[in-house]
Image 1 (cartoon, rainbow, N blue to C red):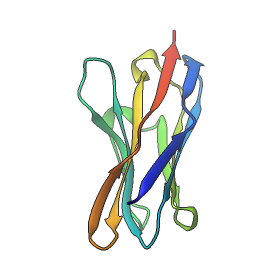
Image 2 (cartoon, one colour):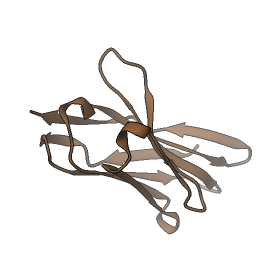
Image 3 (tube, rainbow, N blue to C red):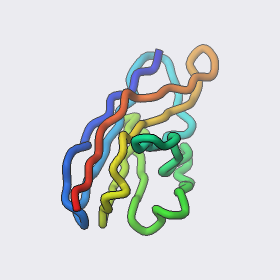
Length: 118
């Protein structure tokens, strides 16, 4: 099983920045896409950003320019740099990774809370 551990969430004032990290661990696996989703109270989980193994990125239209996703393939780690944070960015942020380990897999982290105060 491929396990994901997220870190970097917390409380920040509006206009501030946070950097989330997600490390994938396990044995005998290869990763294709890595991404971040978020879920605010009472709302559905939504895509924030995703990045392929080759570095191609995809962002939610509303977040372009403020959030940046990146990855370190050697460390099996994906990052999300969040700048100019707004109260509406408050949510639980989840890491998602898919790839291959004795078969295709799709794993989710347990989530990290991001709270932006006004």
